[in-house]
Image (cartoon, rainbow, N blue to C red; front, side):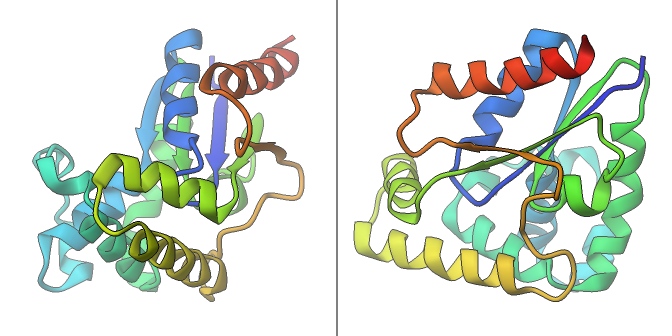
Amino acid sequence: MIFTVAIDGPAAAGKGTISRAVAARFGFAHLDTGLLYRAVGAKGGDPVVAALSLCAEDLAREDLRSLAAGQAASRVAVIPQVRAALVDFQRRFARAEGGAVLDGRDIGTVICPEAEVKLYVTASAEVRAHRRWLEVGGDAAQVLAEVIERDARDMGRVEAPLKPAADAVVIDTSVLSIDAAIAAAVAVIERARA
């Protein structure tokens, strides 16, 4: 069975948590596509060469969840050659037998426009910054400024800007518990599989 769930949204909205839970619930493979970009940014050097030479070890780095890696990912993601180098990998993963959940910034709009389910997980910038601050610490005002800066860069880029697909179901997690957000996503998927 080929069944793709595309989950998009801004940083710290909860899409990773929802994606992992949905993949586990339905027995689907999971790919956090942001890790691909984080790994390219973290490798340093020429981003295009880094994207073309990406390997499994690069995705296992301990520092990929840091704020610095997230900022680096956002910077390299605007480079068309980097995006092109990673698109084929993501599309093959998405259409593999057994079902797949991919989360990122442009899964439903660019990578998998044919996905059977498209979700856009979001939350207010303040809520997302607070979540990120709880995760990484630091100065709360600086974390908020970085979240807002990253949103502007991700939503304003020419190549594959962050936005919901026209047929995506929007899940705003600003006031939802983790369990409620997961339940909302599961309900959408169950309807699509029925």
